[in-house]
Length: 280
Image (cartoon, rainbow, N blue to C red; front, side):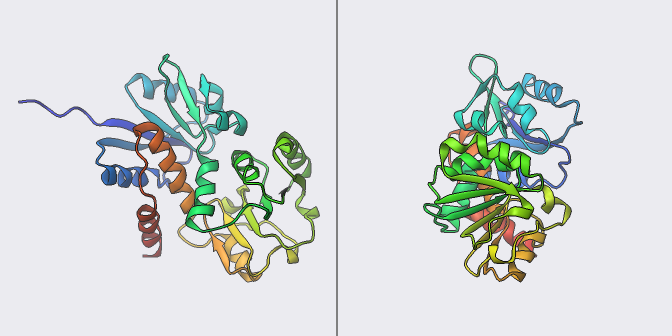
């Protein structure tokens, strides 16, 4: 009598982590594709990240997702980086490299693009984009957004100098400008993406009145059981197109699953299941 081999182990690492939907998402992917795997959520102290990653892989772990606040640390400890991770300065997916090191990738940007363009039908080419925030979340998506050839992309942050520095890092990829939140150009944007941490604290970034029109896509990269403060503000300002980051979360997870397992899961039923759960 033979016993079944233990399921391959994966996990998401963060602090905090209890709210993470990643274990549920990857379990749904595994069921859909017939893969035997185990996926956990690991709470790690902020000064113990590298040790925790080393322990996980030394014990046979196959892959990790990385979330706040560890994406830059993951970038630092990866011995091999994908071009998109190198550009982003952040890693959200780790897996063993054939030479014994660690391969780091960043699937956030492609996750956002797929949600915007494939799931929501947003046209980014020649669009007028506004991105709020200049931290790791914004850095991870600027290159993919600019590679869609928008007419222009304006980056705004509470600290204008930080936005200026970040915009300069990506100026080779397209028409990107920057300012503080108090100096956002007074025009109506086609797409506004909230990549700031304000949403995590129930705050909406201050925007000039004319920034949001009825057809402006207002996309919050964070997600919650209820509409985020940014989504509520956008709706009150007249937008008929407000959406949270659940689709991006599922799409970036699908890209990580594909890296690990060589199979691309269907994302639409998983997004629908999460939205139905939030509405229940």
